[in-house]
Length: 147
Length: 113
Ligand SMILES: Nc1ncnc2c1ncn2[C@@H]1O[C@H](COP(=O)(O)OP(=O)(O)OP(=O)(O)O)[C@@H](O)[C@H]1O
Ligand SMILES: [Mg+2]
Image (cartoon, rainbow over all chains, first blue to last red; front, side):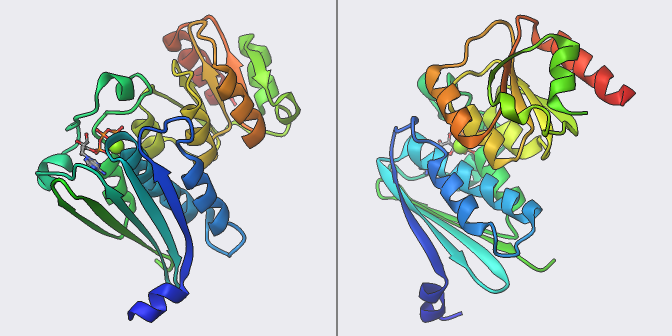
């Protein structure tokens, strides 16, 4: 698909502030609402809700700030999460279930199981995670709408 | 079974969304305090049993279309949690029972039908 197609299918851009656990989940709710009433099956909407929530919480937990973009294509929904933060030095390690650098303040809220990225991968049809240490992290998740 | 029947059977206290108790069907249950675990493994219509009280639990329940949240061991849901639950229409129930007992009793109720 070309860049122009992507811009056309952009449904929303949401800003996320690092360490703001009070508003955590607000962006995911917005994304979920945008997907409703468009003939997308509830089970697929719930998968996208999990992906968005885990991406949102990771930006809040680890980055200074970031954005989540939602694209709705005729045959797929695309979630992109970009942040300005410390980045991830070892992506394979970060993707291992149970690996977490979450501190106590994050764990107290019930996060830090080291499952978030695994969940995103599991609920995506296509999953890309790239990062540059000291710059930030980029995550792209595609969920297909037909099968 | 609807939430009202479940609350009465277990003697739970309802902290918000009374108006939804009759119309909310409980299809199953999930227990856990790790939000990513609940996010991944709960199913729509589940009643969620937890010790967490922070308002993030409302986001999880709402995103996964859970039937409601049972907060155990006499823990008090934060004020923000109840406010957000009211807004999002997620019933919050509380009990002094420990998680093990609550889960066992709900499991028996649901499997008896
Ligand atoms: N956006 C990010 N920027 C920097 N580091 C990240 C980012 N996302 C994840 N990480 C790193 O990868 C680790 C694993 O992330 P993952 O989401 O799988 O688990 P977690 O956030 O630690 O716990 P959970 O998501 O289960 O609550 C994190 O602990 C953190 O070290
Ligand atoms: Mg995480």
